[in-house]
Image 1 (tube, rainbow over the protein chains, first blue to last red):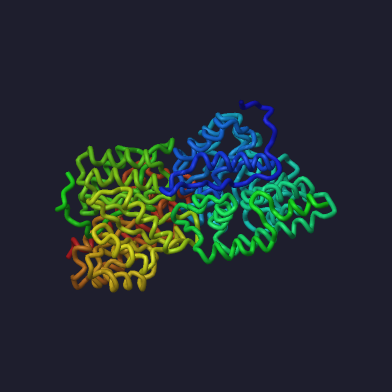
Image 2 (image 1 turned 60 degrees about the vertical axis):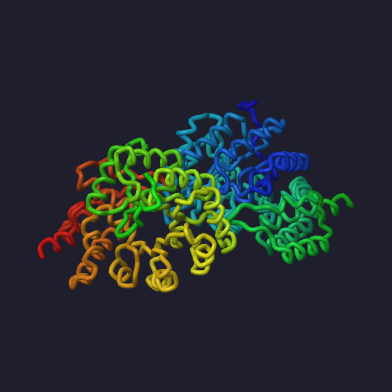
Length: 316
Length: 316
């Protein structure tokens, strides 16, 4: 149940991959099972992120998936559902649902259809959402991912939002792919209880060294133990070596369309081809891509849900 | 009522501006009145376009606005609602509603969140929508607007869709802002009953000379008579001069954020400040912008719903 004492979201979260049946409806049992595995590896649930194909799902479908993991008994305090949409009604509906369920926070994209919009317009969007949800328990994490949205969350926008809504604006996920920007966010706002999450595990150790709250990592879907392990041990002597190993796994997936590649690894590791399915406009890997990926992962000693990094740590 | 003899959409259509009350709910009476005025000027209703702030509205809001103009007695055959969304459920729901109402066609954006998607993925999106709507009366116009979506509709995608769905794929709105592309679409597909609409009136005469079906023009919201008049008279001797005059009006609006500028002209011309309202992330013009725009329009002899071009034609 929601309480004001809900612990803050911290550490590693994953934008949970959404499994789809052959007819492309969400596979609820697979989703529940995958979420449970992630939690067992100490990875929080940033459901409905970019890597979840969230914008390819309706609000109704997302509400049903959130309800399914709540009914399955998973702790809402470990969930950060993505709620951003181009229209405010959809954002508000999903955010209200998440707040009522006691979710640790919500991750909000800016509206991403119109390009070149003003900071004033973006401020009004976030302010309008916060006012419309109208619940003191709401915690909003800003989602900065300009390579996809083309619409960024500037430092001055964060400053203005923090001033206007100090108890609601809880942090940011920085997926700009630019460490200098993450560093600037940490420097400017990290001390005010504003939680900066790196948008990928490639910046894990650096982010933690500079006071970050954690990482929200796509690859944590398939390498949860390795990434959560390094988050725990980032002050250890071998942190840089383990970071390099994590980066190698990430780079292997990054040669292919990421979502389809991670799903191919899921399908292979669980021996369950349904996991290959993606929704249009995405396309699953073709046979050659899949074989190339799996061969490279084999060469790295990678196993689903148990990456090389975790094994290396266990061997210490 | 829908019939297979519904005349094809032709001529000038306008992405109808959506009026919003102070609380940013759609103003239904103003919407009805504006749609009626456009029809009276022989301008068809491409409701829910980019200039309608369509992506800033929920499916529920769009269904209600479509119902309102149908109940008001406007002819569905003159309507081309925009139905594109990032998720297929929303697209299909609105498209089914439009088809059941007898709309002349629907205009469909590609999904626009993920960037760099493949032609195969876009083909699957359109095919999935057509299959899910599952109605022989469906006519789909493809919406090519890469400056906004960053995702284009290539010639080879059109070819593939036409081959797979010859009775459904009805045409394209080309808002690429590149005459060479419009010319290529006309050359490749214009002869097959595939209707090419220019995305702006700046290409009106050229498009008609090369066999286009018409234009879908934002500025037709505020200059409907001028643009519809030139569409009627594009073979007249004064067509190029009138095209140049239209372009001047367009360029005047184009100095400002277009949607806010057109709404400012509506508010001024109708003496109804409610028309200034836009939804976030857009922002209305500030006082200086508004005064500058209105002064420049005055200098052109522009009047709302009765542009200089229409007057010039009447003076002949």
